[in-house]
Picture 1: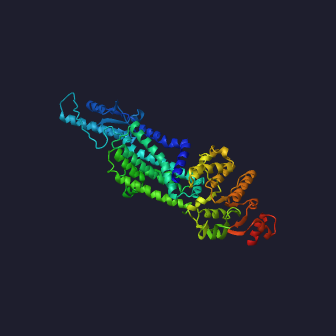
Picture 2: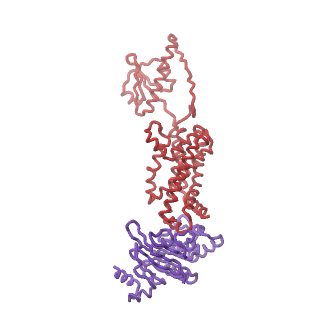
Picture 3: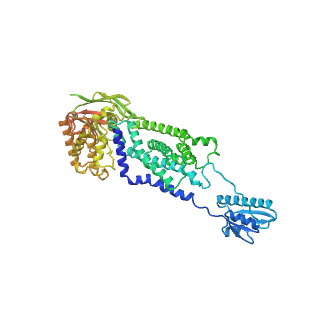
Amino acid sequence: MRTVALIKRICQEMLRDKRTLALLFIAPLIILTLMYFLFNGNTVDPKLGVVNVENNLEKILVEANIDLKHYEQADKETIVEKDLDGLLEVKDEKLVLTLENSDPSIAKVLQMKVNQSVSLQAQSKILNPNAAPVVIQKKEIDTQYVYGNSETAFFDVLSPVLVGFFVFFFVFLISGIGLLKERTTGTLERLMSTPIRRGEIVTAYLVGFGIFAVIQTVIIVIYSINVLDMVMVGSVWNVILINLLLALVALSLGTLLSTFAASEFQMVQFIPIAVIPQVFFAGIFPLEGLASWLQSIGKIMPIYYAADALKGVMYKGLGLKDISGDLFALVVFATVFIILNILALKKYRKL
Amino acid sequence: MNVSIAINQVSKSFGKKVVLNQIDFTIEEGKIYGFIGPSGAGKTTLVKMIVGMNTPDTGTIHVLNEKMPNLGLLQEIGYMAQSDALYTELTGKENLKFFASLYKLNKTEMKERITYTANLVNLTNELNKRVSAYSGGMKRRLSLAIALIQNPKILILDEPTVGIDPELRLSIWKELLRLKNEEGKTIIVTTHVMDEAERCDFVAMVRDGVILTRGTPKELKAQYQVDNLEEVFLKAGRKDS
């Protein structure tokens, strides 16, 4: 009964605060959409200057989607002046490739394409040494993918992590500041002079903000899958389940950390400490190459498990059984934080 | 006379600072008690211990013959904190309703109490406004209404008249006297305003964690041979140091 009253009050307050609601529900969608466009931008064909290159190699290069520019003579300055990505020339019977390399990712792609084309040309020469009009035997390499397909963009791999991160971030912030407001205005102390139990307060906070976290999670998941067309191989319900558990962890961590903050500003200071490092270990960056002690740091971060489970379900299509370990880890995090929360309230009333 | 609150040899320190030192005090039912003293004297710590939000380091506090802290007894204690602890996004009525629902009250009782307390503090016409639009005095009055919402036997008011205009202060005191006389409530008030102390049935002067002197205002003035409590306070303090 008291818990219900508290939940009702939290909802009333939230609904009055339109800006916070907008932050909770609309901001993640805007950021996700932005990232979608950023990561899915069409790649521009690299521009390659050619000097004295054989005709059939040129053909292969054009087929590899390289924008060719012919020059009688060229050097490094030409690359800069003409805004080329690279220059391929024959010097003393040898092919020399000069890369502009201001963006290493473009340089790498160009280098790879040129290498491929050269070896393709070499192949066709061996197979068909005399043929005047070189018929390029285009050997289709049948490429197969374990996960995703040839259309897979970076965003598809990233998106499950992002969905989890936004759920975590916004729920953490809003629940933390929610309870903090109650502390700084003295209403928490006032609550403690009523017969309410500490457990009831924590429960009410979890449920009250939990309701909004559920709505937020559902909106983000539905939007990501239907509007942004994220890869979604597994079950939507599993995705929602993972995110709800993650939201619970964020809620309990947010309210717990608010114990150690004296103002909203101090609460915001927890973001670089408690939230940002989690992003690094969420699987956006590959962890395999890290030192083992660094890798084990990731294992104490809730988002690490949520991201692992989300990637498993959304991208690899894993079922509930495969992600049970991750889910269990999230439950453990939430339980520990909730117990600490109840203990932390002892500051206000010993009983 | 029934003993309402018994404070027995209570001491409390925060870190090295001794806030309360060996306090003994008995509060009888149906009277107004005033804890008078400067800021930082330990008044708030004392009333918080009576409510059970703090526990004494040594000594005991019994309220209505039960040892504090005790969750069940909070039903019988109305507490008004020094600062207005209100939900400013909500209306006055929603605040009252929320606090009312934390106590054991049925629906009709709840409605009655809300109407009654709102009327008591003269906020009936303002109930549907958000608290953020309230003036300082209105907030103070709403806090008082909330302290009374569950119809408690004991009322503990921590500096209830700070920042309230004289007229309103008068009406609050009138109300406190009425609550004592007609409903037999035990009321504890902390204040540093001496003329409020005159209205109490019994006064305890607190400074640096000890009770300097205690008695009815009349007794105290006779004892120190002065005309007002302010001088009593000064004399008692001097004698002590």
